[in-house]
Image (cartoon, rainbow, N blue to C red; front, side, top):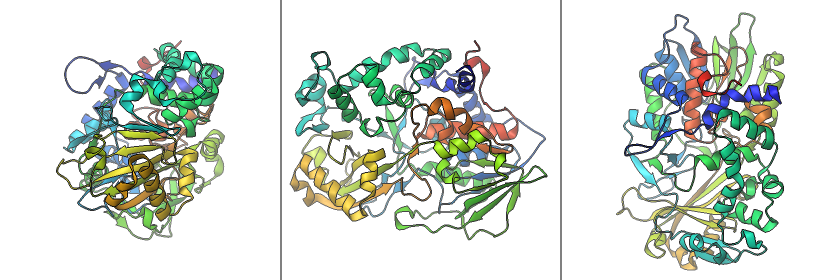
Length: 541
């Protein structure tokens, strides 16, 4: 295990959640690595006399940011994107909605503690809007086992759900309390980087379900209770460590915000930055081959893509059929999902290490599907007294989010009528678009009443599992994959470098993409060598 500990240690700075508690406004990281990243965002990369030709594959946030930092440092950069526009899994839906309303198919909320992405938002002077993860009056609904209560009633008396089979010592506690009691000893142990190494060594092979059963010693009823109420049921077979990191970083008291007018404003502004730097963005370029040459350059080949209606987004960029001739670069930054790399021919094959190829083959990517319904009246406000937040149900829709309009006088509103992950999402993926909308509306009517169908205007959906550019929502580690694969996911292969949120520990968050974009730009520029870290942030024992 010692070699595994050595490989993991450089990444654990990301788990040291240190904040300044003083002063108004959002809490700020005191973490030294975050501070160093903020310095790069403000002042750029170190000056270097070695300027390179660089290809960035993927025009999500990590690719756009890496391209900007490298271009500003004097490198000659070109960005290639398989889709028809920039943004990756930031996707703001505007059509078919009426009245100028929007919804987020991908990233929809940003914790106020994530100050790297907040720095970018401030740089582009993008207006913020509050994202209500919970209705502040406790009026969000919980509808499970045929019992419907408000969240406030549930918090005051968890037994009101009449959950069958709980032991006496498990009753009277919310699912969040049971989860915290089970995982808090691990979090307490992980106060330092060395502590996280011990936690991962002891618990890294556990799934969520196995830990709750064999370590927390909860009853099957309590495990089901936790998994249903915390939306962990579809991820119960996945890595415990990743779920602990996720829950510890985003407690119920976490504040969130969004970007007024659409989250896609951020990547669009970043793309405009690249235009001002004369960095071309070639859309409709799907990477098909990576060829290492004897002169230590890399040749890249591309094919064109045909967008499907569910993925059409329009937008700027050079959207032309790729040249049949390979293009050659001194450095390549790959930000595309690992499942997409399964369809890229690497020559010679051994230039990608065995462990890199293993990571590309085995890394688990989650399915995720959202269904959106627009209504002419915000009945959840006028009739149920809910202002934002979400409803939890064990029906097919699972988690339902009530989007708060940017202006209270806006007509109507939009609900994410179903937000599902993993196997639950794959069930929706088997349906047609029309059936997704209709079925989710039917379930919503079970909770709010059949009369809400009179207010229905239009619906649409987004499945990331069948999206031909994303191959899934995000990387979600299987048990053991944190210690087996984490190091090799980020490791450069010669002059081919890797970025994207999957290379951070803030997987599926824009902050993770920003972190990786800075780190990979530093690697290409020669500021740091992999693994990228400040030694003072990790234990050397």
